[in-house]
Image (spheres, rainbow, N blue to C red):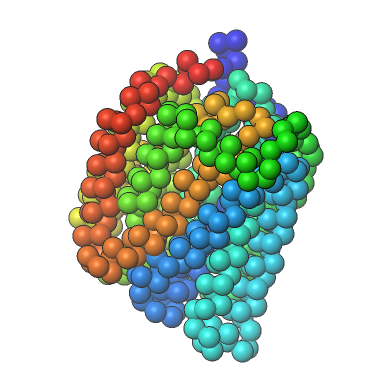
Length: 416
């Protein structure tokens, strides 16, 4: 048994999981490309306004939050694979509309300003609400429990490779061929992602004999998370770390105002955290944090906050890229531990609802964090706002460490 647990490719030896990872990779790659291109369009073509960049994040987060509890319940009731595919089809349609808006002889964007893009971003939040809880819950159906930690690391690796390639490639494509042709390329990636998910088995969800109403089932997921101190504190830690510490939405402004550069540098700044995360992922595949997991999570989130502060103070491109890489490396440790905790502590018949809560805590915090960054940059200034966010992240670590002793003492090896 020990040798199986140490196999760094154990989950990838399952064909269904391989197709799933490929499909999720393609989907997230396309999301990163589309959202990066939208950010670049808004900032460089229409209005150089950091507050607008923050509003884009809010526009995606609000529908995602409002719908996720409902879609989490759907993921515990219906075929999760089909829900994922419905979301992918909606994503394809929205990208087609972006392409038409950008390339049409009648320039909708000049006629109506940025309103059409914001409407599409809202709908992108809707599709993400369907896909996110179903993705997390479906993954657990494809592998045995003993592979959860390894699968979380592999899955996060694919996620971060997409996060590396997405902003960098889309930044270069935007500079070379423009937004219209870029959207056309993204459509082909969405199709390939759909075909990969299509190759996975159509597994029914575990049947529940519960006579609870839909609302009671939704609140059951909330109560489950609330009464699990380790789970709740881990989610809270990541929520506030990303909410306050994430400066990704401001990368076009940093590239322009601090580093005196253009879209290509903005793309690399967005990519740097994912490069650091990928490097850390390789290490974690062979050295997973199975012992002193909670302590390691706390220290790494604190490191994330410190690296964010130093990034705000940097005026050198290479130092800024390195510090962004550090934020990604620190964040990867936290992500891996949190994903493993969620998978190990959640019953099969509640995975959709708990995954929805996890997505709301973590996924929406990226977009709301983008809004917070935009508001803070408007009120405090670009650099002070990022320093403030890093300080709040470190303060959150201190608060969680004091209030959640079970997380501080957590060893993942003892959960299995």
